[in-house]
Structures are given as structure tokens and as C-alpha cells.
Length: 81
Length: 179
Image 1 (cartoon, rainbow over the protein chains, first blue to last red):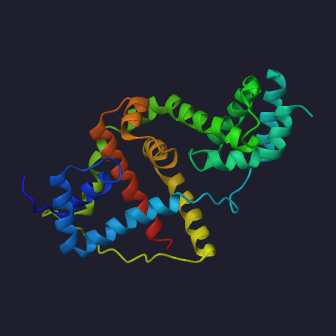
Image 2: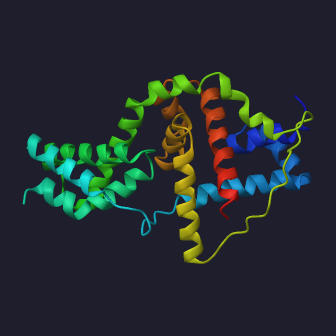
Image 3: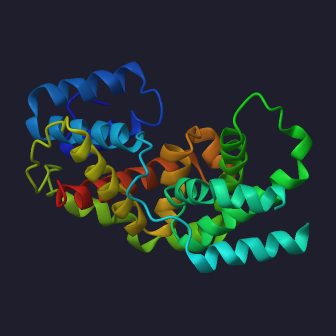
């Protein structure tokens, strides 16, 4: 397995690096490609930004329970009590 | 007013939003809230009073979300196999180069902008195929490890990586039009 990876192979290494620890060979191959490929570098940045943004728990703009949903839950709770 | 009714009143919206962000339909999110309040009623003695009531309920909700995803998992992984497995490969030419040039997203600093992006991400998450949404939710929104996910969904590690890969590519593309 060579160290020279295509963008396609690198994109898989980038996303897998978010889910598991890459071995040293994979890690080196990914870094070598990212050092010379601006597009993959941006892709990697975007993947990390998505994770960072998802970790925000801000809920001000989200809809709450609908009236029907709230009533359905209340009804089921009364039955089980 | 009984405890569960009061919980529903005081924390219902909060719990629903928390669940809605991690499940792909409003019905599932409502189910999660209901299951949580029922479980809380049973485990009332388990509330130690140290944490806030909301923190206690959210702790229960986290488990209920994973339970619900597991419960609905079989039908979804079945539809995820085969046919569309190669869809992400269309993003590359024959020599493995990207067909598309990516923009620099920058890193928005203002709270308003961050809030807007978070909302856009929620919208994009809900447009994912359920089979991809469930695994992405377990990994990224419930923080399960890959090993745990494979156990919960009964899939191989390689399958899990490829599905997460596809989910991330979809979210990237969806978000790109909203930034």
C-alpha cells in the first residue's frame, strides 16, 4: 500500500479519522495528501466544522411540542399512572 | 397536578427539542418524551435530588433515544444495503479526483450566525435518509463509539464507516447551499 492517495481515498480517511484512530500509515498518507491538496484540505476543515457546530445545544429557534402531541402524551401518562 | 403532568408542563418542550434534534420524525421525538416520562414515573426513587429535575429527565431521555433507534433499526438497515451503496463515488472522476471545488466556509464568529447554521444543520439532518440519519445520530449526537453502534444496529465496522461517510458527505453538500 503506497503513501500516495487519491482524493477519493483521502476523503474516506478523513471521515474515518472522525470515527476511529487511524494507524500510523493511514495517518501519514492522509497528512501527505492534505499537505498538497487544497480541495481535500477544505473538505477536512468542513468535516471538522460540522462536528463542532453540531455540538452546540442552542434551541431557541426550534419548535416545541405540538398541542396534539402534548395532549396525546398527557393522555397516555394518565392511563399508565 | 401529578408529577408526570408537571414534568410535561415544565420540561416537555425542552425534552422534545432535545429528542427532535436526534430523531428524524416528530412522532419519534414525541414517543421519546412519553417513554421518558413513563420511565421517570417508575424510577421516581432514583431521583437523588442532587442534579436538577431537567438534568435527571434528560439523562433518561438519552437512553430512550438510543432504544428507539435500535427498535426501528432493522427495517432501515435493510433498505440501506445494495443499490445506493456507490452513490458517493459519483463525486469523483475516474482517477479519483473531486469533480467539485469546495469553498472556504470560514468560521462564523457571531452568535446569530452560529445559531442560523445550527438550525440549517438540523434541517439537513432531517433530510438524510433514515438509515443514514439513525447511524449519524448515534455517532455524532448521542456520542456512541463505532463498536457500540455496530452492536446496536447489528452491522459490520466497515459498513458503519461507509454509512457515516455518506451521511457526512450529504450533510456537507446540503449545508454548503445554506452557508
